[in-house]
Length: 116
Image (cartoon, rainbow, N blue to C red; front, side):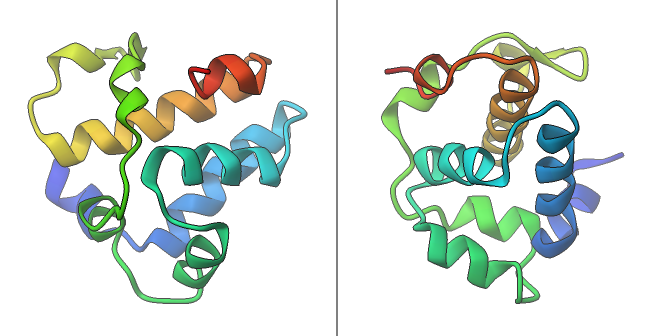
């Protein structure tokens, strides 16, 4: 799937899929929300509001109010692609969230997921 299609997808359709992935592995919606808030700087209330809006997934990341500086410590691969090889900044931000949810799903403690 090309980047423009991903960027245009509604946030309200994609975010519940991330939550479902974590919940299938015994994690919670609250943990996904905590990781999202940590990464983006949005409040949980703002994220909840976006779930009821027509905001695109790309715009969600493009307009992050306070991107966490420690997000740059997120390394590894997502869907077989190394984060260090992603050139498109917005796609990198999307993949950071994917990686956080992957780590949640694998049972990693929140302390390590949030790079504390």
